[in-house]
Length: 88
Image (tube, rainbow, N blue to C red; front, side):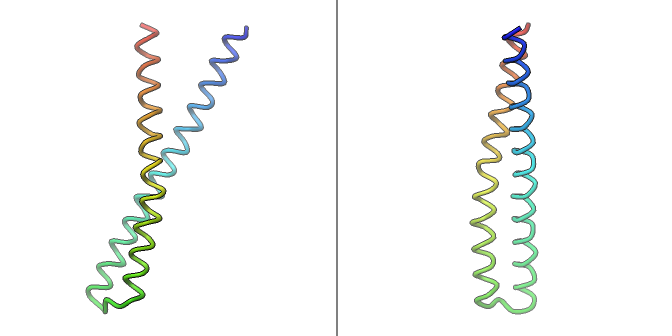
């Protein structure tokens, strides 16, 4: 009985980690897309200090969100793959 509880707990934690990873990736890529749009607008209208500071901020925040999310995504995928291999 204890082992099934551990498996359910492990599965629920893995699902939460996958959700966090997917949400973080969506947010990170959206931030990068927004910075691309701001860069294009800045080039066409006027590339001033505000545009530059906004781009730097968005790129830093996007990287801070996206990098851990990608690592977590690969960790979840690796754990799922290892579990499948052990069950066969």
